[in-house]
Length: 247
Image 1: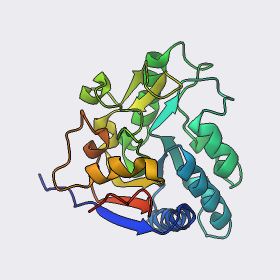
Image 2: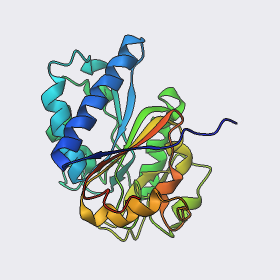
Image 3: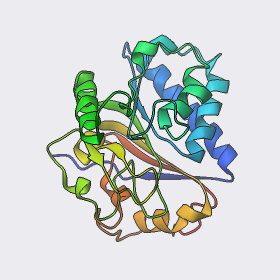
Image 4: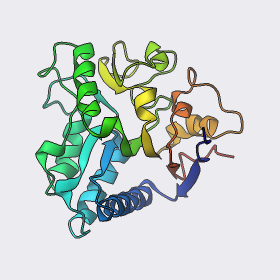
């Protein structure tokens, strides 16, 4: 088996500059995929910097030449709450990007909410079936944030979901970060990504980023973010504050 490419690090002066850069890179990747006759499959993330990125994609995407009816959207994780909750990653993405652009609603594959599944495990099972039905679960692009504790998607340090190797998605209960019930893709599912982009902003993430990008990073049980790499590329898009402890 060939070794995965070494991660690349890009540091930008501000969160705003970071968001604009990532949005432009997103549009280029999607355009290249479509020019090759593909329907790009992208997995989105949540959080403050993701919100800025979504707004920039919406702003730049109108005149980008992208055929928005030919992009499939997924999520790496989701909060198991009501469908109209402001805590849902999908609602944020819809308001800021998906409902602004002419996206085909049939190509927006949300993780089930409390209205769609009886519990987090049922939601995870249903979402796994959705992911499996599209390209065998392969993502052209997976975007991920990183928490101050090094968590990625909803894979938290020391949690049992880190060890799951026989499922696409898993339910999470007792999350250290509210809301406490979530659904997350597992490492095997995240690993089926051509490109992985970590998008990180803010000084509160600096320690986790520095440890993840150190010469001898800790293991996944301590710092889950180190367990995800893209098959073709892994890029850490950082602002100056989040990169302050990268040596």
